Amino acid sequence: MTSATFVPGPAPTRLTRLRDLPRRGLVAGGGHVREICGQWGPGGELHWMLQLVELRRPEGVLHLPPDAAHTLAGIGGPQVGVGPGAAVGLRKERVLHYAGAFLELRRPQLRAAELSRVLVLSSVPARATPSLVFSDLHGAPALPADVRAIVVRSGRVSAGGSTATAMEALVVPDEARDEGAGLGVVADDARVLMVVG
Figure 1 (cartoon, helix red, strand yellow):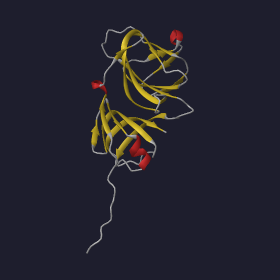
Figure 2 (cartoon, rainbow, N blue to C red; figure 1 turned 90 degrees about the vertical axis):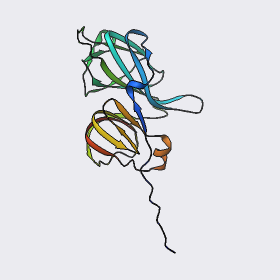
Figure 3 (cartoon, rainbow, N blue to C red; figure 1 turned 120 degrees about the vertical axis):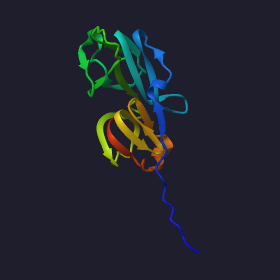
Figure 4 (cartoon, rainbow, N blue to C red; figure 1 turned 90 degrees about the horizontal axis):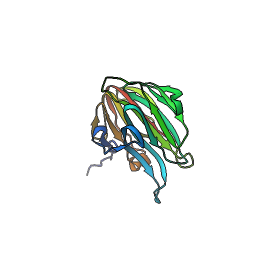
């Protein structure tokens, strides 16, 4: 009789195509928001949530979860101004911390139809403290053990039996993170934004 050693395979991931997610209009202005992923407690209380805001017109307002801290990341299109009077500019590849119940975004009036895209990570510090991290991935990189999601800006990332390209995300289920199983990531010249922590 021969003995066998069990070696666990890569943890499963969920492929999410951002363009296919349901969208809802902003509180005011022209654009919409799509919920990518998040975690809620048994009573529906928010732990953390990642959303994609796509601004089409010169301004837009998004209602944010109360009692949460927010981190914004520019991921595409023209720069946007953030806050009342658009006091702070947010460009692609930049991360900004934000506090407030409403997020006001403004962008220049442009003839181009390209959307301004901003990722919004909201988290309740008493329950979760994830962060947004831009990274270049090549080959078989080692990722942080507590990665929650990988949003692909360019290139290709494969993990847990799924492959994501630009404007797609790989979401790591809580069970996979709790088990501590590796994701088995393979990347092809990918620029990504990860939710970590």
